[in-house]
Length: 603
Image (cartoon, rainbow, N blue to C red; front, top):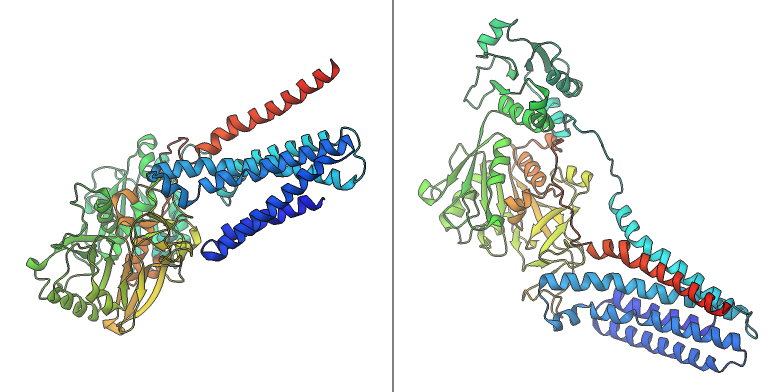
């Protein structure tokens, strides 16, 4: 290796440290400037070597200088991709993403195409300080180019491999959902015996598909607490008449001696219909775990009552204009957990007291402040053993009195994390997958899948709260609060970790209370629920289970339903087109150039 090559590598290393390690402040510019000066010095030494007496060394030095200049030119697309330059160009959000996506591909390719051949040439020049063997410089150049282009081709392969880690692929056309961890936990925690009657004729295909599912549940349950019987409506007419069944295809759950279709909150008998033909039953079989869990909750726990606070501009299922504030699917998720949903406003008596029959209270990003009387009613109810879910957002009211009672406060926002965001998406859509140690997040940590928080705000712990606070979800240290919403990091803004969700609990015995506070409402909106790879719904479900004191039943519900996959070049388009066209064309061009040169020499 020559001195010129070592100096060039040191200079590029200093620039790398300034940009990627230091990142901000005067130290960054000092490292960058020093690195550029060292690079310029190394190029000057290479230019001096063009005066070599040996023609072969002179040719090798010229090739090395050209490759060094090519590698150094990779700094140009990098500079053009920085936040300072993109801001000056005045691009919109989508334009910035596309611009930076193009330059993010060009920069490493230009660097490798210049740097690798330069190193190969330097090795040859260093090994032959006086006379360079004939044609050795050309061979070194072509070898370096070949290696560089192969590495460029490996980029998209490495990207795909890193995102397919720990994945299993099931190529079967159809499969019945397995018993999920949540359902197994519920069966294991049964306090009253449950009998499941499967009304299907012997040998029925749908019945055979369900047998393994119930076999797993029988193994998970304590002895004598979960039993499965197969019945035929035509042969067991007395039982069918008692259960008011007129045909086969029914799944019936009975707890103790519960009355059929009891509307009481106590245990009873619940039934749901399945298709008898396998072809028509496939859709329900794919989501059978969710279907059975919903009815098991209804049979064993009865219906609970959840009140949604209204009258202050809260997000709700009735929202018509903004899908990020529409909570239709959240409402369905709560109903699947055996909750009956009702509204609660000042006119319904919230200013006096929370109804005694309330099992859960939900406050979803009110735009206007709650009255002091309403806050007093909520905190009084909490101290009597209430369960509270609070969603605050950047655009809504800060709820300072309620949050301070819980020992929390709403931080500045919105939060953005440029290093972890969805391609071609709003930069304020934060993808978070750092979870605290808590019953609510145990399954989330196990799955290691992210939650999408649209325009979240941070939450801070403060003194004077009435409960114990535990962090549930936090950002990475690359996030910052964009106070002036200009979409970039300013000198008065600091990158740090922000806490996005908390669990709070206090009291003891019969008056033990629990609350969950999340610095975002959009993560449970209809838009977020539509993204099946995100786990916002699971955070809500497990939060509700923990609030109800049923943390033993947290877990994932299994589903084999087909998920729509849209194939498009968006986001990773430049990797795709670069792999398909750009790299092969570069290889073809290099091979063609070499062939032309050889033909000319023969002539």
